[in-house]
Structure formats: structure tokens, C-alpha cells
Image 1 (tube, one colour):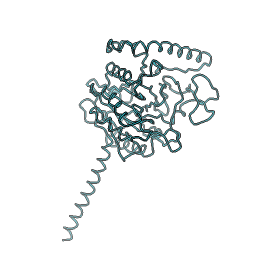
Image 2 (cartoon, rainbow, N blue to C red):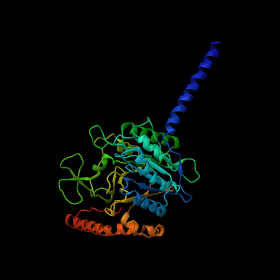
Image 3 (spheres, rainbow, N blue to C red):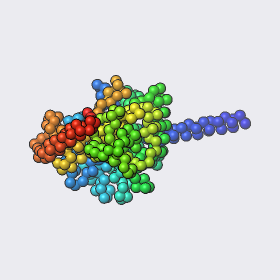
Image 4 (cartoon, rainbow, N blue to C red):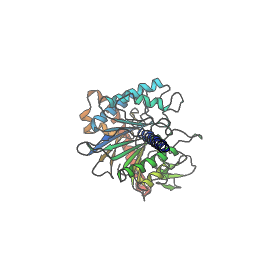
Length: 399
């Protein structure tokens, strides 16, 4: 009788343990999106769109340009990293979310969303409510992480080879928050960093190797300033550090640099160790952000590219040389590498790719972008030329 009781008790304990493991696995799986797949030729293309700040003034032309970019680039995934359509009420926000998501829904392009500092700052609605608006569309693969992690929109997107059953590449998506209690910009929180560390290690153990990856979020990591050169010299293409008086930074000649700065990078004030965790784990090749609208640059630091992408909105004909989108190309044969390029609206409307997918209704929009963009480009080119001539330092690198 005692043996029988012990046997039954053992079975019950085993069942409880298995049940607990299943619950844990289910919770973990809940933060992993359904896999996407490389194409037959082993390629995968991401269109990084950020900071559209859709409103009545720009929604028509912004979504038209984004639609043309989708037609020209034919991406396999849209990555939206915040400040896309925030308005005074949830009803207004829904209107603009519907406008941009319809562009992707009608073309059958998967979309991964996370949020920026403006997406719920007015307190009229929550990030979870906004995520539900995106997830009303079948093309959204975005995840509301609920109470599991700080914020809303931190998850993993695995990329499988064509017809494969295991990941060959990963995309980490982070909600980098809005503001801290002292009204600084926020940053990825400690529990999100812990989740990344544990999930990354789990993946390596499961597959017997690191799975290379890219990370996406709205606010740039604080280590951007560690990757730059501090200087006492104020001047062109040298920028004051946010939250610090009398500290100025520019590209370091000793670093690997891409693109150029047009404004100061704006990370959070406090650092919760996200970048350091990525450097230690060694699986993230680059971390991409938006937030700083006219910056399109990259800096390699501790083996990781810290990259900023342009605001993707249409802003009248102003900033047409500094607003646009970023393309990222992956090849499953070389998962330890990626390629990226920046496309500015001025260059886009003058390209053969744009001309091939546009129609007569775009002529006025294109002409508007070309007009002021010509002068903006000329002014930038002259500024770069004389800065480099007189200072002897490089301020613009290939994108």
C-alpha cells in the first residue's frame, strides 16, 4: 500500500513538473513570433521604417512614398520602430495606423512593430491598446508581451531557411520605453536585458551554436557616445552630448564609421546593460534605432554596429535629403554578415526604381521633393567639403 502511494505521489509530482515546464515553455514561446523564411535564393530583405509621425498634414504623401518604396524594394519584412501614428485619442491613432498598415496588408508584407517615446506619452491610451490596432491586421507578426516584460513590443522574430525547420538568423525587437521618472529619455529595462541574455543562451544551447542576429528599437543605446570622439572644439558636424554640459562629440578616426550626423544622438540617461549584454553574448551584429530623425549613420563598437535610421515621413519638401528609409539584406549562406543602405526621398524620386513603379499622380509630389532637395543636397555637399578641407577630418562616410 505504501509502495502504491509512493508511486502515485511520484507520478503526480512528475506531472506537476512537466506541467510547470510546459507553462514556462509556453510563456517563453509567447515572446517568439512565428518564423519567417528566406526566399528560395537564400535572401531576406528588411525595410526599416521609423518616426513617420503620421498626421493629417503628411499621411497621404507619407504612405504614398512608403507604398512606392515597397514596390521598388520588395521587402520580406517591414520593421516599424516607433513614433508612427500617435495622436490625441485612440480613435485618431487608429485612423493613421489603418492608413499605413493597409499599405503592407494589401501587398502581403509581414510587419514587426515596436514603440517609441511618443506612442503613449499623453496618457490617453496604452501601448497595449495601440499594439492591438496593429494586430488587427493579418500582416502583423508583432507581439504584445503583456506583463512578462517592461513596456510592450519586446520579442524575437526567427528567420528560417527556405523550407527549413530551424533558425539561421534572428531579429530581436525591443521596446526601449519613453521617459524615466526624471523626464530623461528611457532605455531598454533590466528585465528585458535579462530576457535577452537568457533567451540568447537558451538558443545557443538548443542549436549548439550562436544564431547571428540584428536588434531593433526606437531609442539609440547609450554606448553611442563611447564609440564617438570627445572634443572641446565646437564646430560643424560636432554635437553636444544630451544631458551633459560642455561635452561635444564627433566621429572618431579610430572607429569604423558609416554615413553622417545631422543632430545629436539622444539615448536614455541611465544604462541598464543592454548593449553590454549583446557584446558579451556575441550574437548581435548590429542594433538599429530611429528617434533622431535626420541621422543616418553607423559606428562599430565592441564588434557591434550602432546604427541610426532616418525618419521615414514626408515633411513637405523640407529635409527630403535627410528623410527616407533603410534597407537591410541578409544571405543565409553568410549569416555572420549583413548589408545595409540608406535611401533618401530626394534620391528615391530621382531613381529609375521609383520611376518604374510611380504613375502620373506622383508627378507633383516628386517635383516638390526634387525642387528643395536639390538645394539641400548642394548645401550639405558644400558644408561637408569645406569642413573636411579646413579641419582635415572626415565627417561623411559611405552609407
